[in-house]
Amino acid sequence: MRRAGRFLAGLLPTRTDYAGLRGSWRRDLLAGVTVGIVALPLALGFGISSGAGATAGLITAIVAGVIAAVFGGSNVQVSGPTGAMVVVLAPIIATHGVAALGLVSVMAGIIVMIAGILRLGRTVAFIPWPVIEGFTLGIAVIIFLQQVPALTGAGTPSAAHTNVVVTAVSSLLGADPLYLLWALGAVVVVAACMLLLPRLHPAIPGSLVAIIVVTVICVVVPNPLAQIGDLPTGLPAPQLPIADLSTIGGLALPALTIAALAAIESLLSARVAASMADTGRYDPDRELVGQGLASLGAGLFGGMPATGAIARTAVNVRSGARTRVAAITHALVLALVVLVAAQPAGRIPLAALAGVLMLTAIRMVHLATARSILRSTRADAAAFIITAIITVAVDLIVAILIGVVIAGIFALRSLSKTSKVRREPLPEPRQPGDDRIAILRIDGPLLFASADRILDTITGLQGVTVVILRMSQLELVDATGAHTLTEITQRLEARGVTVLIKGIQDGHLELFQTVGVLSALRHQKHLFTTLDAAIEHARTHATTGTAPDRP
Image 1 (cartoon, rainbow, N blue to C red):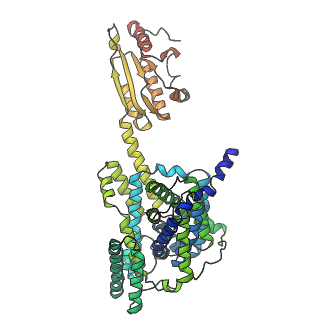
Image 2 (image 1 turned 135 degrees about the vertical axis):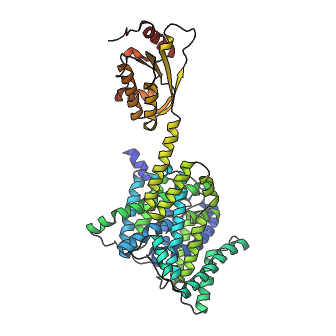
Image 3 (image 1 turned 60 degrees about the vertical axis):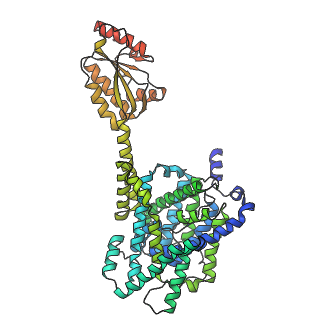
């Protein structure tokens, strides 16, 4: 109980979270302002792209940004709406409506909190790198395709077509050429600002300047482009989402999917941040609790589920952030926009936000990384490609699961190839009957993937009356491998071949006893700790052709 209490206490904020603030507060404030400026167009764009609306994106960035900064496990993590979450939310909102947003956010937040309390924070380490990169590539493709309806004036996807490829193609086929031309012009201006302005000075927020330039042009020049519309001039009052058992049941699977994605993306982002600069260790379990609280809080205010945002977190670290004050400041900057500049922000054309998100999606794809994976091994290349395809065509979580399974299968296949059976010569001087003794050394792991091959190799041995199985080099063994040893012993003994076992490791002994390896031996004397003793006993069998120690 005391240990559990200490663990739970470690999930709560402490004064040490702000250690070093006295020396870094200026950099933290500046970093927070920088990230807030970068996050504004993304928050608006991701909210609209999900179908929840720009208001939901802003609320999420503000409410979840503060909560995750205070309760999360990273000192520099920046949380809010992300492209990956939009990919999951868009079909859910298209199917269940915007009214389900608050409830599914609360449900997902509770699930993520429970995962943190159950200490599941380090499970993300089991996801291979090629799977993560394939997942990222798939998300980038989806984010890019999700912006096509905004360019054509088709709006958000309908419930009839939630697949982004189908939606993008259908919106292009029905597009108004004049509207599409204006929208593409806005995208070109946005891309030019985002690509060229940072070259003039790295501190210039290209995406924000791009949004301002396109908005000013559209205000001055008559055009058909749709705008964001009215934004709130303050945060709404929190309220519990209306729910009944049937609604909760219908949203259970979507909430689980959102929770899994929120956990994976947040932990990956925190891990990346920890590797970028010395900003203190991060606690993965506390990070899950903080992100769960953030999604729960955002849901109560009508926002979206939140995750750690890798791009914004990277900007935060590169801007000099060292404590949680930076992420809190980023949320306060966005809140100030809501209070002061809500009306001008409502005039932003949707095509401009689409351009920002399209370029963001393109920047998510690292060609050098993709090339290195494709040139590494066939297993990693297959996991990368299949994960990316399934992410786009089916579902994000399904893609991760299948990618992990594929990577695991290839890993087991490679591991099983290291399992070998080597026949060793008997020591000199040779004695009569030595040609009927086989010393077989089992090297590497003995797992289910290699068990049949080892079984066929040993049981196919001919012309011997005694087999010594050397186990000292056996690295890993599972229940299938142990059962295979039992079957090998039984088959050889049934043919009249005496089986001796030498060098069982202490870590394998209990498994061998449980599965029946030891009981399959003809006699307890057939278990040895040294090779010399095993050979001496084997020679008594080989020369006499009898079983002197048969019980």
